[in-house]
Image (cartoon, rainbow, N blue to C red; front, side, top):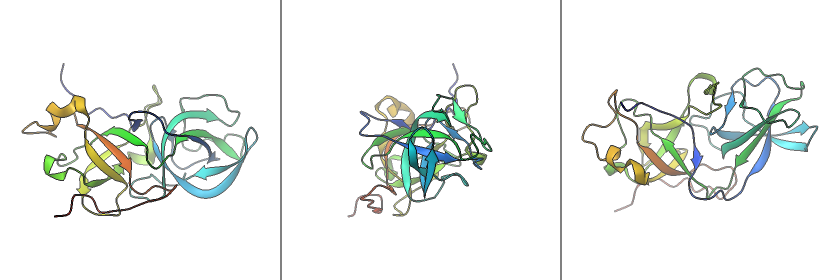
Length: 213
């Protein structure tokens, strides 16, 4: 079977360290899907089921933004009924569109696939930082409710102000990572183990990627 450029957002690697509920403002500009990395809006929104909850950023995709909370583990509507996703412009109860359960420990490890948009991450870029990349309005898979976010391969560098710190390829993807010509149209992007570098819940190190000589 041919390899494909498969994306599925961010999945916890090893155990989940902690998680909390957050609220999505009514009629969000972007959608929310399982595996989406989300950031905070730094406002409190009233949930009829859970009282006031911190709101997530809902007016632009996460790409390049700081104050990253973590990735979505579960999604619920305004009544706390589980749903596949919260669509952009979902009005909910006119106060909130729904609730997100987010794994938000700043030490949480994640695994996600690189998008190799232009080039693939190389062995020489081990320990570097990188950004998240989303499609328009952070739209995901309507059928599965899964995120389409990936690691932005082109962004991998030693720059401190990037969202993720890379710890290396997933053990099952070593052959893909060592391929002489990764990132071509028929190749499957490598999954990388990573951690949030610009975490909202501190401490946030924002240390330049790579190892100093």
